[in-house]
Image (tube, rainbow, N blue to C red; front, top):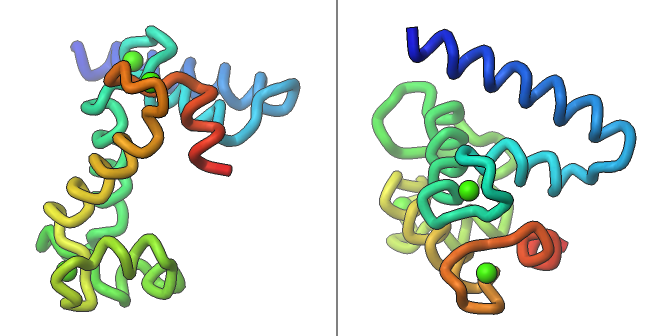
Length: 126
Ligand SMILES: [Ca+2]
Ligand SMILES: [Ca+2]
Ligand SMILES: [Ca+2]
């Protein structure tokens, strides 16, 4: 039952974000809203890392907790992929993704309050 409610809520949020995106929101802002699960207009470390985990699961087709070049396609040439691959294995492990995301979070949190507001994310993404 809880899952149905969450799914409906996600659907409403998506619809809402989609409508507003056309009107006035940037892609970064829409992604921010979707990532902000508790709706406090701040991204906690958990919320920020969760987005990466959801993406990871989407790409990890064989579910071995490693993203290899076949699974990510062109992204494997992306600097973010290459930087994240700390052991230079040619694939990204779940641990490597989380480590990179946590480092991203700290760099983006310019006022050091332990949360990212939409301005911090926008500045970091641009
Ligand atoms: Ca939040
Ligand atoms: Ca690796
Ligand atoms: Ca902050």
